[in-house]
Amino acid sequence: MKDKDQLDERKITILKAIIKTYLETGEPVGSRTISKYTDLNLSSATIRNEMSDLEELGYIVQPHTSAGRIPSDRGYRFYVDQIMLEKEEEVTEIKDLMLKRVDRVEGMLRQMAKLLAQNTNYAAMISAPQYHLNKLKFIQLSKVDEGKLLVVIVIEGNIIKNTIIPIDKVLEEEELLNLNILLNSALIGLSIEEINLEVISRLKVQAGPHSEVVDRVLTEVAAAIRADDEDLQIYTSGATNIFKYPEISEGDKASRLISTLEQKEFLQELVDDVNDTEANSGIQVYIGDEAKFKNMKDCSIVTANYELGEGLRGTIGIIGPKRMDYEKVLSTLRNLMTQLDVILKKDER
Image (cartoon, rainbow, N blue to C red):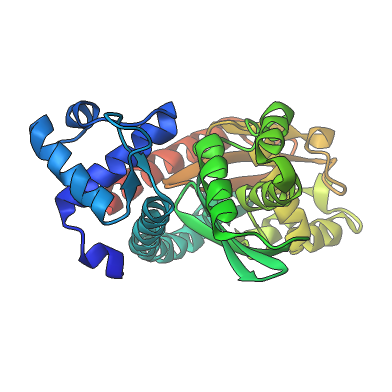
């Protein structure tokens, strides 16, 4: 961090303001413009002096006499490195806090699955909170060696995804810097749905000879934004309650149902189906074939999502016969959702 050592906070703030303004406008930036956008409460003359120092240090350049300044390659590099450092610190802090919350919540969810089964006399399941992320916050491309690029992707919830992609030609530092600026300017804050063909086509045109690199990066961005549920934890309880209802327990129906409830693949599919059909955390009722699950045609499934914040979401499910006491089940779920909301809000304080 040698660069940071020779810049005080005022110079750093002014440099960031210059770069952000130039990224937005594409025009050289003057001291009067900076005085409007910073919280320094400095005069234009003072800002001009600071800009002269930044120019002398090589962070900005003056393309024309009496014109404003634009960032130099060194200025861009400082800006990108600062963003990465800030993101890493922010991610570490928030991730530690969220993991502590998740640990506490998962113990509570195990107990709630048991209570749901006891209160309804049906089978119950609750999935641990998972990240359901859909917006991009930052991208950083860095050279690993001549044929590889490290792609660091920061997505909503402050989760970092790292991957290495192959490249066909060597990228110079300036080319890499321009790609970083291009990708971040175009994609920050977009969801996977918003990164459509029009956005992709425009980016590839702007990338020129590096369109193939952009295409590979976008593939990794799409993969990172989609939640990875391989380690999904699901707590179940009350499977033996099935034996209380002849229509779903006669013959080998009960063993098939219990076997299904023990299969993570089924539970994962159920959670995915709920997340695909529910935009919010409302209650959803699937009756018989509506759930589209084999061995569930004689059952009803009632589900709801709960929110933990920072992109974390889990699913609650109650499985029983079609003649289940819907009024009691819906009331129980609503009460549980209210309790969860109170507990989680209290946990945030």
